[in-house]
Length: 82
Length: 407
Image (cartoon, rainbow over all chains, first blue to last red; front, side, top):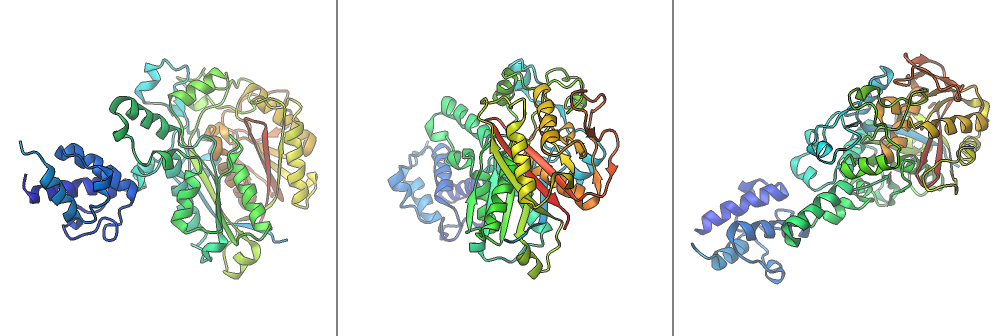
């Protein structure tokens, strides 16, 4: 899965949960400051991302994922390509 | 002390998605009760297969993400509050002088059940992080408080079927005590589901005889009544200190002139058959309005269509007010909206005074001879009204009476 594909899927999850237009979900955006996503929605996004990409996102890692790009990078390096 | 005026009304009910459609349906004597089209009715072999379900589903009104973050009881509160706020002309008020008081009888029970199913079937990581804010009974008030930026205080009276009326009483006290200039107040409940229907049925409180004739099931004061019909919805009023409303040139639809509350200390669910506690609340409300019983020419009754409750209420009315007022019982049309009932019916009482017309009691065909009071049936009745009293009584022995007068 390429980083572009991960971004596209992650954007869909963010739209589903937080109502942010998927086109707005771009790499440089901060979840909290730019996309106005609260900590409760971040938990939901993480759970769906875990299921979608087959990765584990422990809470201490989640806290460090400030931007969409951070999340895409984390998922990309932890994903087990099948 | 300041007068308390009502400047905005909002509702979403089994009769309509707003105040106008609800009021029109009440005047027409229509019923909002219908068959429940859900698989759990047959799966659990529920004796009750009917309810007074919302005429307009919240999903038709709210944005998708708004809806998924709120329990249905919160959704209806927000919908009705938005209507009431618009109706009031979106008052400009300091956040520190704006309060919210919204009661609920049950709160987010439907969310609790759904998330418990998820926990059992899919495990903890699938449980929504919004579970607690969706199930907490202060959720409807908190969501409305957030939306309008209320910082004077956000409160939630919980007194079963008196909750909505108690919220209006609480708002009245806040305004009288000068704790706020504007209060968004009312009630919300939306818990039509298997366990609530089963629980009320096991109390033998519900109508189980009209599953094939739902529109005739709720029949307050009728000799053939045999229990209430569960409903869902919300009613909200924007209330203000009279000086504040006048200064901003607001349209006043009526006044909440007085309130009275009391408790029975009689039985956990059964009303005191002598109606002593109810009558005490009614007298207190009339007194605090500076009126006498002869001024009360209309009573918007709690009458839920249970055999015992309706007669007890008639006894209370006769003892506290007399046999002169003209009565109506809106639950014949609305069903029983639990914590929203007092708020929606308060709206109806206020509109009756404003418009000089009292809606008929749906399904009242043969008045129970033990009631022997003037209950409007069949057609709305025109009458110039000085003051209308609305009574709400909740399991636990909570009694609330509200007196509305013209603007």
